[in-house]
Amino acid sequence: MAGSLAERAAALLSPLQLGVGVRHGCEAILHTARRLAEEVDNIHIAQADLINAFNVADRGAGLRDIERVFPGALAWARTCYGTDSELLFGDNVILSSVGFQQGDPMASLLFALVLHPVVEAIKKEAISAAKICCPGRFWVYAAMVRKC
Picture 1 (tube, helix red, strand yellow):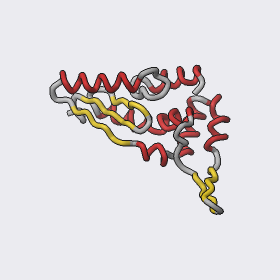
Picture 2 (cartoon, helix red, strand yellow):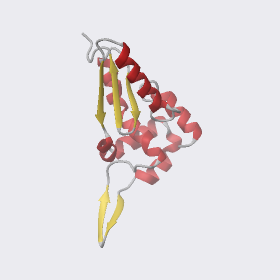
Picture 3 (cartoon, one colour):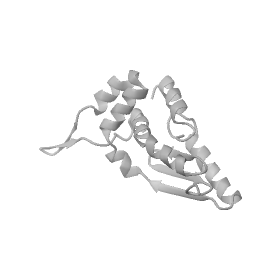
Picture 4 (cartoon, helix red, strand yellow):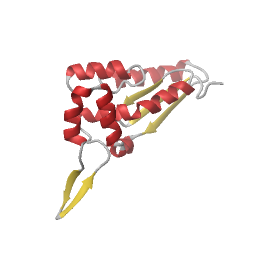
């Protein structure tokens, strides 16, 4: 992801999501989780495996989010995800119409944008912030899972 886009993505998604545009964001979350688990009573740390979610995320939602917050990147995102991809399996063509290509630098941003409303909803219900580590690893830090 280009430098200026990464900086703007980090500004939009931080501090709730640190896996896109934040240098060493994943490591910071892991160290923080370990420290919180050792030092804070009554804390719940949850990890959900979202690896498959990356592969089945709604491309249309990602494109709408890119258009809304990073319109300058829309043309590239549409080139990559605006139509079904044709996957060849022998003589057969399989159309791929969901998810983002792992390894594509923009895919992490698209996935983070699609997931952002979920992260914001968790933050609204939790006392402390919810955070995303990196695509595929979702961490929630909260003194209590729900506000009382």
